[in-house]
Length: 591
Image 1: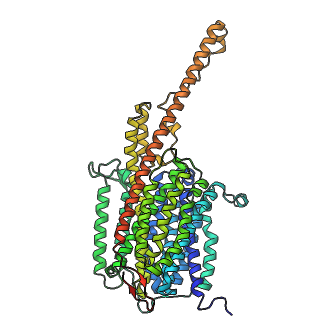
Image 2: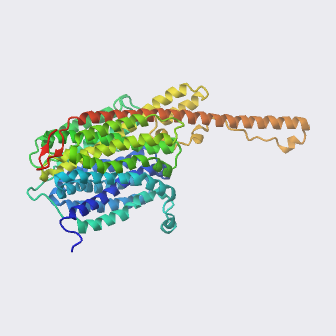
């Protein structure tokens, strides 16, 4: 009897694609935990680290649709395996990176692999499972995402702190964050071997697709410029120019107006051109606009972007906040995030089965509303916030995510014809990735802008901090690194803070002085030294208190914005038509 027959092959296929999905999810989570260590190794700023994440996400988003289409034509299994190989090679190169620029480049290689894999995971599930079983399959898919979120912070924190003690010396690795990339290699190799033997090839035999080069060009440029504008807006200025914009070594000026508004305008123009090109592309457009005539697909794509916006934007910032402001180690940070991830992992398969029985519409609405509640709940940090204060808010957020994610995938693709599953999956995944990119960029920009305003207000109220020191803090806050970078306060304030005098009374002079006078002078000198040190220490304490309070106020406002976005997604999700299948056929039961 064969180990894999037609009855259980679909489950082996689901297990294989979920195993590969675990690698993708792990990668995103472990990298977030390692960012502070990477910044220290490369002496890099916050903007560099944003590009480490967004280079991957942008590449992922730009090529998802194209690779989804190519997978339909050339074979979903073939593209899945090719993506796995690219991802493993990219991970290996990321581990070898010698500077931040190399790391960004190698993350692009990873992004190409992920873009080939992700639509294949969804389309292979759709191709192997009947419609009435997809809710459960998508639920397991979501549970694996939850497992990756569980393991990611813990594994990332441990690897960043400890590495692999038994291998550190053998491999001559002292910068342990490199393991967060190397960990993908054994997982990827196992997934490749399983794919060869388990997955059956599937493709669209009825159509021959062609490249939509113009669609790829205009969509890529539009997404890139939009993301660039949000990430670099705080640096160059949202309207008034803060810094000259350089392109290929040449400074570009628009008078006193920043380059950012023009970048946004160009992004919108290119997006409009893209839509025009796709509308009149009659042979295999990159995005088949006819898909959006189905209400569920339109609503689902938008809701997926909103969901990813609220989640990824928030949880990109959380590890930085917990490590840099609260002073938690990476391992401790990962442990704190555990309740959130466990809740998703437990609830996602339950939600998938419920969606098969009662329809996904109100599960999605309830999930995103609960996620909004969790965002408002989390947005009440204090400077003295304790770990126990975070457990319940994270559980609430996890309930929202676990309820909404599996039925969202299923209900969005439910009415999609089988021969368009690959392209539709690519569009859905692209919407999700664009939401992630925009979440990181927009919430990051909102945090920086709010932080500058809060710092200004809090510093004005801090009379104990001298004006030159206040000006220096604001200057750092407005820099490309901001206050989330590697700021050495002692070094920055050294020219502004008096140092303790090191002068000592020479022995030749001391011998000629009366004992009483010598003792008095020595006591006076010691008092001056002590007072100067105490002043510097008090000043640093006051500066840290103001910076922490400003960061706490800003992160709270940022989470409130993310919660409003999630609430908006819940309202939009009311437009879904229900997605429960009838018992006697596979027609859609509209409720």
